[in-house]
Length: 272
Image (cartoon, rainbow, N blue to C red; front, top):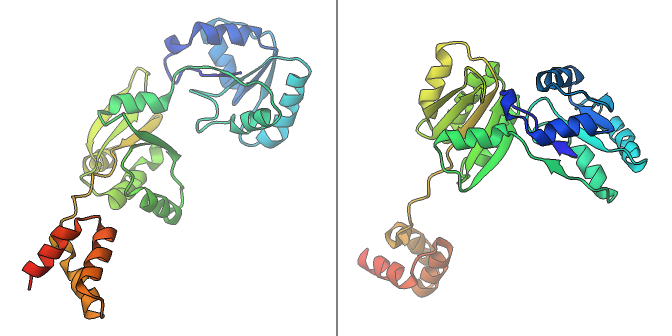
């Protein structure tokens, strides 16, 4: 069982989460110290065994946890905040359980991804989650180049001390006018959502020290302007100059550019 935990406000914990924490035979937690703070805040006693499960021991501990389940134990997986396996430990455990035909289910809870998206003021009908960008500048630039033409709204996570560098990279890849939002300390007392262009958000990040958990939402690439037949006359003329018949050149260019052959042919004739 995967269970979502509060991303800041303890009032967002569900009754189902409280019940699972108190009844599971084994509770696997990303950070056992944070788990203890969580159960104290929720005033629940964990009766089962508590084990750590994080990025540094996932590979070895996955087998141990699955053995517990095979023996009949109920296993609950929680992370520090939000939904396990979403930029947090849990994916390897789910993957291994599914491969063995072990039932996996979830108790949904708060999500920083969806909360930031909903508050961003950007389109929510189609979006993608990109998690943390690579830290190395070259790898980060390569990833952003791949996303430059992405039409969906994009959601990223970033550490506060790297936010300025991230926004600078986003501006370089997407342009300073691209709409975006920075969501900070979601659901907490000092929650803040800033909306504007990437240039405006970069200027804000440069003005002072940024603190807290950060999610960055970026609008997708604008739709390309529709192609006009007149824009492809030169391509037809080049093919004709290389020996292709006019009608064949028009047909080839029109198919590639997705414009009307009749209109392209007329545009070529009009240009003579």
